[in-house]
Length: 149
Image 1 (cartoon, helix red, strand yellow):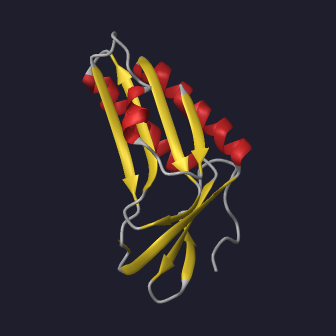
Image 2 (cartoon, rainbow, N blue to C red; image 1 turned 90 degrees about the vertical axis):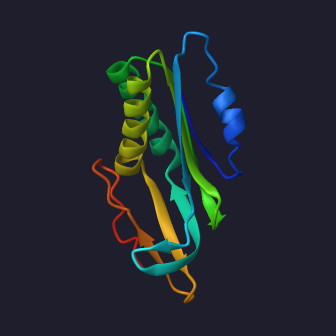
Image 3 (cartoon, rainbow, N blue to C red; image 1 turned 180 degrees about the horizontal axis):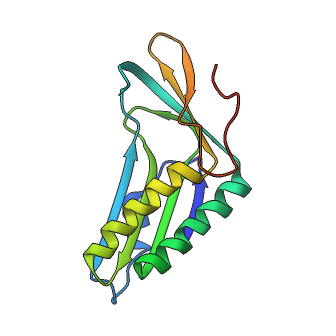
């Protein structure tokens, strides 16, 4: 089980290969991509910042919770930081389990909890030249106060 932040492009083929396990009956992955629109605004790029030590600690906790809750064989999550262009992968989550129901549920749990609890902040850059920090509130102790421009 591992989580990491990366300033480099993500390689989903290598990430999936890292989950190989002959006990696994299922592998479920999720890829989050930078899209060109959000809430009616035309987006030109995204920028992610993180608090690395806390992000890795909280994300590792989430992966551990998922392992127990869904009886996983393995789980990997990687989140980008830095400037990302349209179409780039911002986050990748992969899990293996003996059965598909557990794998699907665990993958969903990991991405949902990561977005809610891990101190990673997203700044949208719009084609108008304006930018705004969004989705910065978390359920944990890491709420991003004052991040809006």
